[in-house]
Amino acid sequence: SCYNREHSWPKSWFGGFSAGDDAQTDLFELWPSDGYVNGLRGDLPFGYVKAGTVTYTSTNGCKIGTCASNESAGRCFEVADYLKGDLARTYFYLSTAYMNDWTCCTGPGYDKWDMALWMENDMRSWHAGDAVDNTERARNDEIYSNWQHNRNPFIDHPEWVN
Image (cartoon, rainbow, N blue to C red):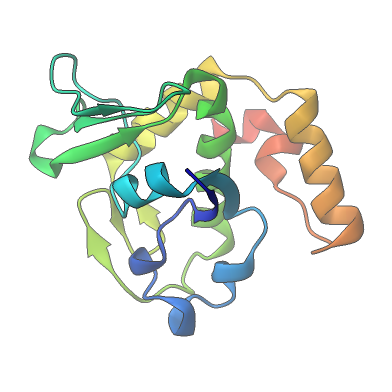
């Protein structure tokens, strides 16, 4: 319904703007999104959605429903297949870049900078199923060359996820 700037690792997971150690403006954290869909996602963890539990599907195929890998986590947000690897590598970057910097918070898929094992396993699967492509490489180059002057190493070296 409108353009929105999505914090892929929700701000509430690292304590908001004042506690993010600059993650709130890290371009690897930010993704363009539809405002309506982003509002529905809120701070739901990324993960596979269990078949038969889908309560919402966006026009590009993102889904909300019960987390397939850990039903006790509640609801998950599953991105479209063509975005899964990109967002998984974003999560590996954020978890590494902000290790020991984020001192807040704990939720169904994370503990401070660390992903819960079930979410990490889903992110590894997303990474394996959606290889780095030229668009992702170009974004990494642009962020490095013209903005932040750092790179997402999991794009440059996808083997490092393993």
